[in-house]
Image 1 (cartoon, one colour):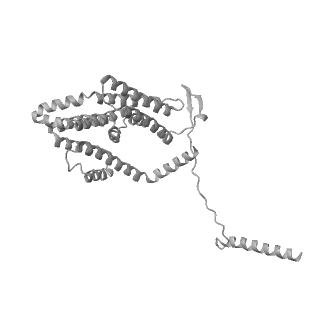
Image 2: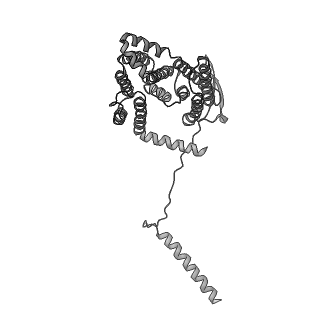
Image 3: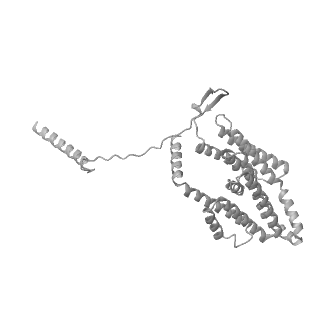
Length: 337
């Protein structure tokens, strides 16, 4: 355990010294995954779905605020949708606009949350989202998480129904608009996952903020279990096609990631918990104090033996000379006897 704590301290020092470069690197990786998944799933415009476009957009967005990445991803999706069908692009643009209005109302400075939520669903690990968001954020993070889920299912629906949607466009713009809107908003699987993620975030955050021992561990496990139960029961009742393997694996992965986050951000020693009581003129105060676990990183020290002139090898030479003289004197003494 002490070795892991030492490595944690080293990582914190590295992050403190190179945080700008680390964040830009993570932003580049996120952009690469995001644009790569979009182009791989709905790459209807060949030019925009090329590998050069994916890498180029990721590089550009790595040096700009996260809100730019969200806007670029939205525009890229709408370009692909427009190539497939104009009504799909119009409805999608309206839905994105409505989501962003609510998004900027509740969490304007947490742009990356929408991207993380959509990426988690795209990578088939959806229940990592409620554990991470519940541990690291507040109940308001339900809003961007839900928007990320809706955006993912919108793209997934267009991917699976591309041929039917393109042929429906020929029947008329108005009919296509109504049909696409009804099909997207009536997706029961999407609303089931929105419910599971929202409840999971609220459960994790509620348990994490309680003053009980091992609150983070309990929160991670309970949040993962709640999400798995809701998704499994809903999948059975609604007759959905969600993979149970994906449900269970993502739940387990979410619980494991919760343990990692606890080690990195909330490592405490419950064995040394203190309960303190004091008062003032108006209130009695009952305080539970739990000390953090911290270790100092050992520093390697190299000691050089030098003489007054600064020669590092002189003392070593003197020691060797003394030993040789002692041996010679011992031999001479033996001969004389």
